[in-house]
Amino acid sequence: MSWYNEGMSEVEPLEPHIYSQMPALNFCSRCGAALEDRLAFGRVRRVCPTCGLIAFRDHKIAAALLIEDDTGRVLLVRRAWAPMQGYWSLPAGFVDYDEAPADAAIRECREETGLEATITGLLDVIAGREHPRGADLLILYRGHINGGTLAPHDDAAEVGFFAPGTLPPLAFRATHRALEYWRASHTESAL
Image (cartoon, rainbow, N blue to C red; front, side, top):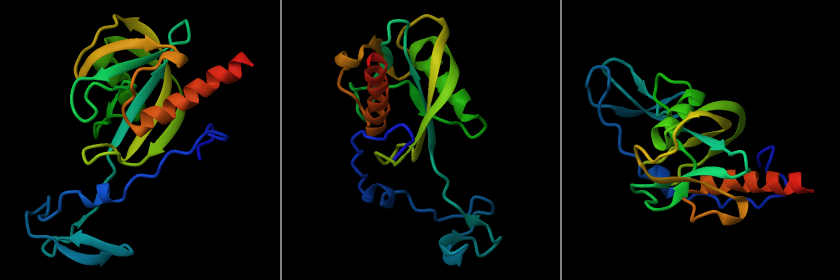
């Protein structure tokens, strides 16, 4: 349970078969030799018998940005491609190997919505791959707009701002979880 999620409904656990669909690692990325299964660092891992490289699997990381406009509506993008084509999510995408997660969140927002944003805080880190090509970890930031023109770009079919009671059909468990927190913060501020 996250620091902000106390009292909210828990998210359904992911099915373990998603991780079993990962492609096999068969050849060494350093020397090209066939990898073998060996005990390394407390578990069976793929190891190169020629050069000794241990093939560690790294998590895929994504970053998302939750932005409200001046009237308290949240910025969402309608997905132009599978998975979840036609459903709405926060501006988000994968973190490149040479980029900080906060920079990735800002870049994805610009690429998908045309808006320039600034990070104002970290909201959550959400774990769990939802589909075979998805991220293992989503780093969720809060931000605000500081420029640009709202228009769909990149892999967004539409972009728009939505009030807590008028959300469109949402993609992904992580989107639902982030917007649960956002709606709860609106309820708390109304009290």
